Amino acid sequence: MTWTETLRTAGEALLARRMRSLLTMLGILIGIAAVMLTVGLGEGARLEITREINRLGSNLLIVMPGAPTSNGGVSLSGLSLTMDDVVTLSDPTVAPDIVGVAPLMSTRATVSFGTESATTTITGTTTDWETVRSRSLVDGRFFTDAEYGGAEQVAVLGPSTAATVFGDTPPVGQSILANGQSFTVVGVLEAVGANAMTNDDDLVLLPMTTMAQRIAAPSSARNLSAIYVAARDDASISSAHQQITKALVVAHGTTSADQDFSIMTFQALLTAMNTMTGVLTTLLGGLAAISLVVGGIGVMNIMLVSVSERVREIGLRKALGATPGLIRRQFLVEAGILGLLGGAMGVALGLIGAAILTPALGIEVSISLPATLLALAVSLTIGIVAGVYPASRAAKLAPIDALRSE
Image (tube, rainbow, N blue to C red; front, side, top):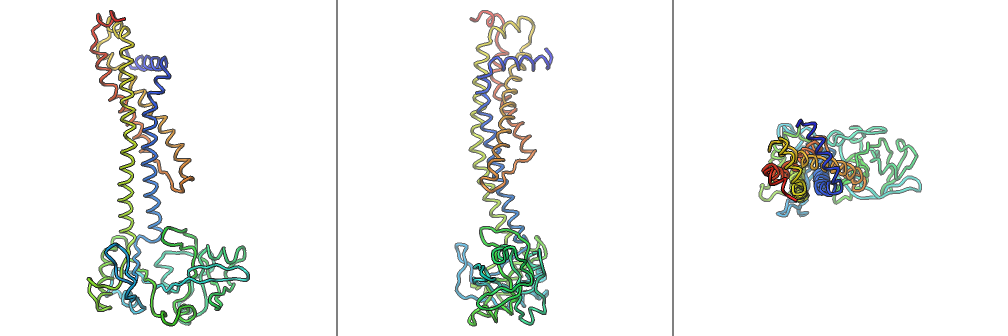
């Protein structure tokens, strides 16, 4: 018997019991779809986290006032960041792996244009902010060093703030009011989206000098909310972190044990989040894979029933010269087809589920071609493995005993 004849005979045998075959494939179908969606959701979450971190800046470090606490928070006592610290960190002899430093002095305030207003974050910074944050503008320009030095009343808006306050009116060249002060809009930032920590599209940027003179309270005009620091590249994050710590400990006259500042790196956050996502994906994928084992047991059970029902057929084939190897191959092919078809339907269900869940959850369910091919290979393997015992049992039947069976 050729392989073509074996495949044809296997197909006919499965079609003759189509309802039973369909129910047998159901376990593998559900298992494959569940594993694909679980792993795809985990991979999608990982990609989303990576995109968010890269958007914020994978080489970005944020120095914040207040000592780090044992539970991972920040103590707000001893607020201590000033422009002197910015000067220190900007010195290439002190921190050679730092390529950009941008101070932040932030507060919440209401800005208005005509009858429209919005409560947003007003941040004073320097011209280095644009480079450190790798942000571009969709309209206008960033404020200049001359405007910074002269404490000019100019502002750069986030796209969300600009849309809320100005609507369809072009913002550049218009004036907004904030704390009773008028500021000319010189630029609008490109949208980058919001995340769980901040909305970088909803803000107003002013020169730090202007912020200190026009918006900040006199008692806090020297205190910075944070300092953004750009490392040379991703590989320099660790060394830049050490250089910042050493420089500020010396500048503040403290020690590493009682430092009055904390440093957050998105690279460490990315690693932690990816680890957590990987563990959850593995756990949920393992739970979903249990249904594959159940599906394999179902295939084995049905193939054993099939062997019992076709004892006379097996005896007749052996009487006509079929070898145990051919009989074994026949049942293994049938089991493999059940596994492969169940896997194919599971892949189809997984793709449909991914298309539905992506917009519903707001997170991309990432299903790759290699993962799809692997799912098909796994389902085929499960079918064949589950068919080994029934096929061996069929191959061992003696022709005379098979022909005598009722």
